[in-house]
Image (cartoon, rainbow, N blue to C red; front, top):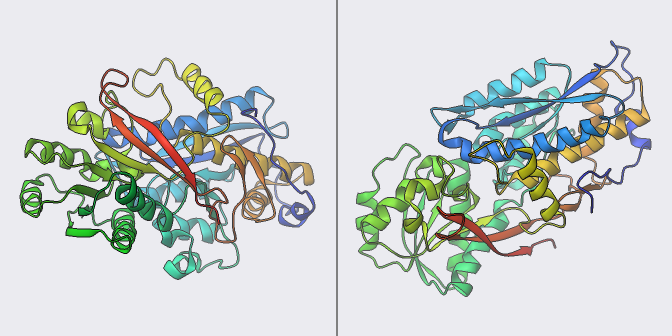
Length: 422
């Protein structure tokens, strides 16, 4: 499969969705917004993800653009002091909405940011495709997604190519119980939208399988000393520890302090702990150290061994070879590339259906096209569609383990993957 491929699109619906509104002509250069945490320790998450989107745009522009229009990446950083910040994420959305040339957004990375951004985008009718969000309440009505779309309840503006946490948390519970043989696990979460949610679903499934939770502790994202929690937890003799959270909430420090305290049980977590190799500043392996990070396992809510992975990896490394820190793809580089492909393919369909559409009509046309469950997109991850809630038709979970010997200073290595499509 080629990295650049036009999805299977139907043109008829777009004549209505992207009908010319009689405004000024569309810009010659259209913009793809990217909203990610890009600085400080959060760069280990955001930078490889941004580069996945940039690679897709560079390749599309090299092939002539979309409908004769050049695409420009408008990347905004919502990290504050090295951590994702919901308020800054909200400002990102207002900036994108205020620029009529922005046709859609790739991002965000963190579910807490998405929870703030979705209502703003919904009111304005601006599409988001997240490569990494997993919290259930962003898409599933019974978990509160309808509350995020009150302004335009019939016009979904948010989709994601990542599997949600009704799958991710239980998937690690099954792996921990059946594959790793763990029966008594301690859980620590970072008290965030994402961390608590994924820890809740892990706990429920682990108990269902017959496992025991020795202790459940909430440690806020600003925690800098986990020693008291570790000492109390170790006294109950868990044979594993599951951390529901992200590295910027303290995941790397927790792991480092666990090992220093002699707690050498397997360290488990969701995709929030899988953020780059030991050379990437701010990564779990970089913070904890490669030896301390050994015996760590994570899920990633995306396909790890996707159809065009070898070609994608080679293209990414060539494009960003000058970047000494982020010159290899991250866990969500491929999904960001896929989100970008989806948005640009929708744009292509809108422009073919209505070449004279203005900026407002293009924006609405892209939103309507991508969120239409009848549309299918040929992406680097494989064929992708979205259900009416915006969840992907390819809910893969991939499993990774830290190899301290990989790439010199340690890296996450792929173990296996599973498709949880019904």
